[in-house]
Amino acid sequence: MCGRFALNTSAEDLTKVFQIVGDVPAIVARYNVAPSQAIAAVRRVAGEEGRRLVLLKWGLVPAWAKDPESGARMINARAESAAEKPSFRDALKKRRCLIPASGFYEWREIAGRKVPHFIQRSDLQPLAFAGLWESWRSPDGASLESCTILTTEANDLLKPLHDRMPVILDPSAFDAWLDPTQTNVELLKPLLRPFASEALSVFPVSLRVNSPKNDDPSCIEPAAAPS
Image (tube, rainbow, N blue to C red; front, side, top):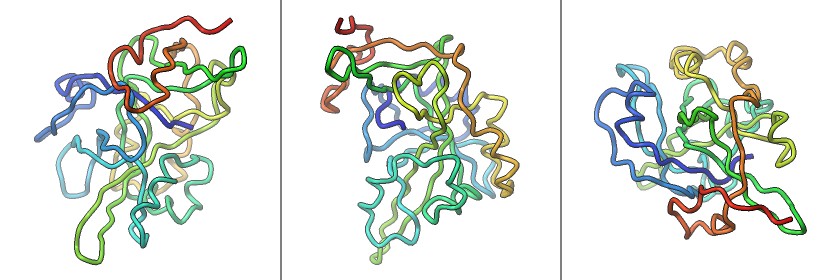
């Protein structure tokens, strides 16, 4: 799964990497992003030109949901079954996005305690998680846009930490994934696979990341693991 990540890439660099057009929302460096918070996402919407960078609430709320708090349970969606799940299948067809990250966290039990580890690209370029987004409207007309991160089975590097990992897309897959006219899910499924182990690096970090209240550069600094 993916329940915590970091994004400390500048808006300028995100614009270049993801080829963003139009206005860009204020992006503040984050080192311990947690569910229910607003996160950056890249999407294309039918009728609009180019890729847009927007802020979405992390935790997908389906359009038909009665309670927006249901999103707290939907921060991740399994890539293998999203096409069959009522909460995700329509978004998988029509509302896909990329969620930029500098890296993400997973925990491994070492010497009797769960130790957080930070996973990032070996070349330090931003990661692009495959995501889905939805728009929900309350009875009084208030709107909420939210998202979820797709997950797949872990690659060999990450299996010691967890049996799942976020789906990470290469730039060569961005166009296909974001194409709002592509509604054939079968053509997209080959993209939803584990990212190459050799393209990632992993190292233990401070226990400070266990609390979302701690959100500063020390969260992603390498730390000695318990022996």
